[in-house]
Length: 318
Image (cartoon, rainbow, N blue to C red; front, side, top):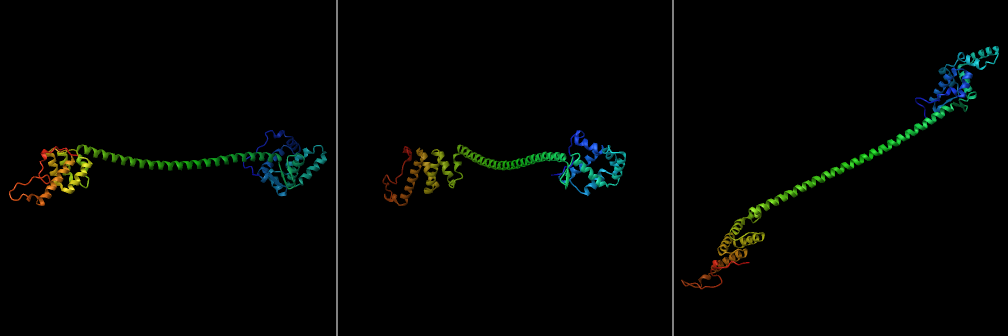
């Protein structure tokens, strides 16, 4: 059993205990003080027991101040029925007894006469003190166990809270990263939309500007000339104009566009036909087709390679 460290309980009406009454009757009121001094020593002892030996008795007699002088009154009171001669003899015998023997006799009286103590021959103890101490230890153990459980649960709660806090922090960090990524994507998309809106606005103000970043932006002069003299330009028309420039050259395409305008043509097909016709004339001329008439003879009119009066054409082309 654990030791009672600071105090031990006792009944507030212990003086009414018959066992205490017997003790006081046998050994005087001073024995009440000796009794509580003895209980304090038992309460400090391991397992609330003290050994039955001369060292215990001598030590207790010194602490409790049990001497023949202190036992005179109580001892004589216990033998009040003796004769005066016997009383004197009793006192003489007590004076010759050592202190530890007196203490041992007091303890034996508490065991045999008062039933306040018990012994197994090796140790002696107080059943009442042991009962109260055991009850107190049980309550203390119960309280300690409740505190231990509360501490364990508190530790688990703190650990769980720490894990949850860590998980929340990681989730918050992940959400922040995702929000940054979404923000970056939104900014990028908004920038793209702004660029697209700007391009559309530039196309509305100047359709040719849509092709300024093209590898064939060198044909801008052709596009502008076409828009000015023939009509609106589209990506398909742009590609066909690029093909004409690649085949006939910029100057020849501009000539074909001008001819189309003068003839009232309003389509890219018209321009392509004029450009092809002009090229054919150049080829025929280079091959000497104009020398067939000879001298100053008037050239024979033919349908192939002859001059075309574009002003008389209807301009209805695909």
